[in-house]
Image: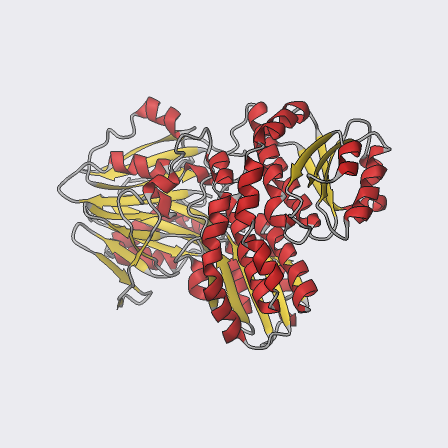
Length: 593
């Protein structure tokens, strides 16, 4: 999604270079344009369509006067990606400037009314109604704070907003509803941003505003007020991530860096064991579990369903967050609803969480401390992946799985599974040493138009996630299937030379999956298999093979077998000359429906 930042610097330091640096660290969220507004004698704006480096080379974004301002990277929702639609947006008199992340659902009605009142609009965006509304109220005598408060009483939708006015200097007003916003306290000034990597270098003491709260920032202090204007004392939390953790550290792309950090991410998340045991002890008897998630987190949830039903015998459902409201009436006080989200700010998941809180116990599994889900859920498991910059989730996925495995093993009191989980980091480190074979495969398959991924049982969600990774960053059509479903449709699409990835860890499903391999091979498919180093039959039947330690059985395979599939997607993307960190049309932290 879009990203916003803002800052007020002390000692009259120029804000533009800091704003540019901060907003550059949010480019991983996906964007098509960039803009910066600073305030000196008036509002100064530079913005355009394109990548940050291109726009900066053309406009010299750091060369702007003023010790405070706001900035934005846009991911188009309303209006084409172009200079006019880029943020910041102003009223027609350029007295107010605004950056916004989210969607204003009723903007057309507001825009029509404002136009009748004489307001002139320039862009096709929903955001532009916000500065016009603020100007309208300031013209009536409201100060900037109250004008913003009146404005958010009219607009409907999801938003994080930061606003400045030339008529009320040295002040930024910010607010949020269903879009992320953090406020940072630094030695040299005060900061706000959509996500912590933007401001880690400048501030690690953080305030997390709740929806509807207004943040008033000036040179001297940060004040947070509720919707009625009452001052709220907010807790200050310290982020333990370092700025270096959000850098590439010599890797070509963030994605490959984060793939290589997965063993550490698993080890760190295993430290949550005692916290998870305390949650289980406090939960008491649970008759049903329901996972709610989107995308990659949805695939982690399917693995959770298999674990909890097979090991603990607890009926478990997995529901897409965007579809959750259609199942909400089935919840009760004996249901535990588990929300899996990397960012903890996913809009669909937050709406579902609010519904679930009305009837059931709720648990969030998230990677970002202080995010909305951590504040709204009854219980929280904090995954320990560190900042993930690449749009395609990798280390946050295995961290989610680690938390789910710990939860399932502890609730089922399965000591053998607990022992196996602690071996996973070593398994991952070993297979990462064999990356050259994946590089070779990527050269062979980079021209493929279609891929199929198949697996049974615990390997089915691996197939789904492997296909998703390929689609996300290579733009090759990939589909994941339960291997037993081949005869119910997908076999019609298997033809000569179609790559089929077969996920075949040792275990009770091996024989049947091997039969499915034979089915697709007999129809001319190229077999790219992931299996055990001891699997001699698989070696004979595969066109290409990546082998994994034979001690990785099918139950813990999701934690390990996904890694070569992440690598395959990564290296195919690189071979195709694509940027795996910035897949087209996709964004990190989806905060709109």
